[in-house]
Image (tube, rainbow, N blue to C red):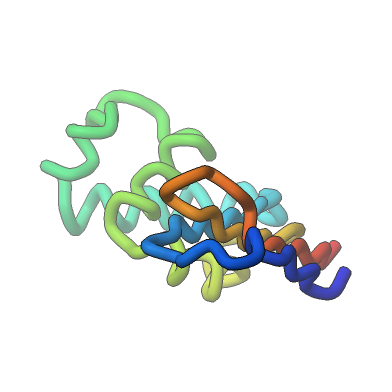
Length: 112
């Protein structure tokens, strides 16, 4: 779906905006995702422990993704999703005026 710009209130001065980017991911290779989590836990066990990992606990897909996001910028994780056993299925961008919460821009791209 192409970007759908939403018009501003006519005559209103834009003083600020909040831009939110949302990426929906699907697990395409659980074993690869878990290996990615284990690699992070080996490299940075302190970070891994902060997110609930211990050497005696199993690495889950959820924990592995949490470690990926804690170690990397979410945009980088999305860009390199296939390297982690993930697939981007939807990417959304929304801009909202900070003074009145009016949506001034919205786009959604389905990739799956």
